[in-house]
Length: 186
Image 1 (cartoon, rainbow, N blue to C red):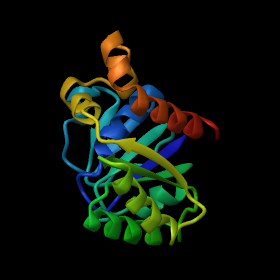
Image 2: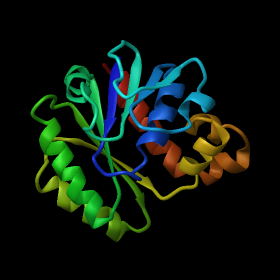
Image 3: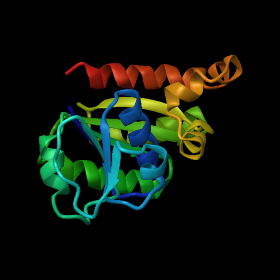
């Protein structure tokens, strides 16, 4: 299985989702963007200016700067494009999807970090008007993204850490479980 997580916009959750998906599905993780993944996912992650195509890997791409990104995206089983409710994020996400759909049509959009139904609908309407046939998943703002990186635990691990956290992250984890099931469906 090969999964690429890409967006030209930073701060949309690429690394948090990439790390968590890789850890929960027991996949390798590679990134072309400086991050803490090698310290929180030792022996299973690597940061490289030019990631290598390997099987059973999640790729956290910080944009289209590195050579070979589109080649790996073309060979991916899924491309995940996270997007927040910020106008610039929606704009950069649209640019990213337009570029990616030429190499791989199996694109999943994660609407992340929204704070209200109005924000969610704004992103959804903007993207669905141009990209009707994509799969969409919805992740309301949650500390789980920050805690995942800070504590080195996947989303599932954090949710299982205590009954209180399981309740606090319930909606997020329900949608995340739906995403994992989709990714495992290949």
